[in-house]
Amino acid sequence: MTSSSASTSSPATPRPPARRFDGRIVAVAFVAFILIVASVAWVIHLQNIRARSQARDAAEAAEAAERDGAAPSE
Image (tube, rainbow, N blue to C red; front, top):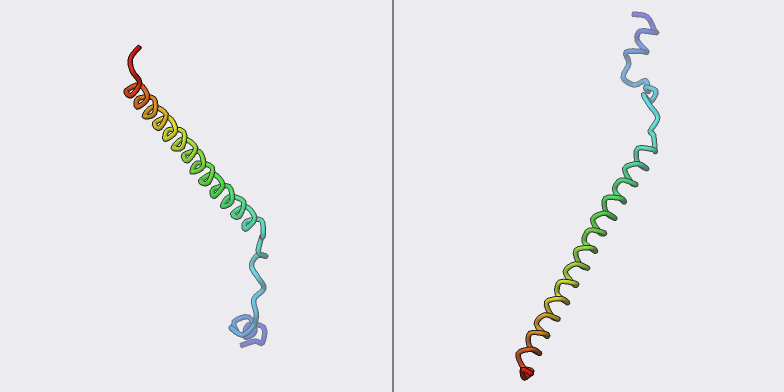
C-alpha cells in the first residue's frame, strides 16, 4: 500500500466542498414567498371590500323597505 493511496482512502482527510452555496436561490425563494403573501393579503382585502359593499347595500335596501312600508301612500 502506498502512502498516496492510504491518504486518499483515509476518512480523516477533509474533502473540498463540491459546490459553493449560492445565495440567489434563497433570494428568489424569499421574493416568491413575499409575493405569495402579498397576493393572499390583497385577495382578502378585496373580499372584505366586497362584503362591506354588500352589507351596505342590504342595509340600504332594508332601510328603503322600512321607509316605504311606514310612509303613507300618496
